[in-house]
Image (cartoon, rainbow, N blue to C red):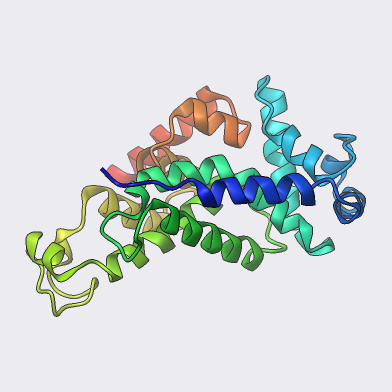
Length: 246
């Protein structure tokens, strides 16, 4: 069984407990609230309170508001350097889900699950910062999907020669060379969804299908992340599945 060290998560939590209550955090919240009415409407005093508010499980309206706030944070993160850090903290539960889906880096270059998760955090940070100013309807799902894709590619590049031979691949060939049929059905599905996104498949529908079938999130979990009702998400998933089979 893959050994999982939770030290990176503990370190993030401890560091955030201090940073999120600082003067800089309060200033960041003021600037973000000035730029984004959805943030101002929450009436919180610092980024710590903001992240806590995003994690409160309540009504569909409350979840939809939380999803809208994270979307606003991604869009206006440039107002202060601590805003992307708050986004990263808010994504932590979803990142743990991605880590589990990727077996905590088993088969890659990492010594243990803790080392893998540290890389996952670094990758998430890169994606968050790179997407500064972007306005995404499904910000949480899009971020988690991008992180998963990058880490999965990294794991594939460092797959050992023995593992490549065991699935019928020439160890001298790169991941994209002949014999790539050794990839799993999940990887094939992920690539298919990515190729259809915006090219016949609605981006929102694609995000929901990816979250459900690739990231392994239940409809309830997707509802909590996106703020949309389960009925709405089920309809999007069915529509995407129909497009996939067309």
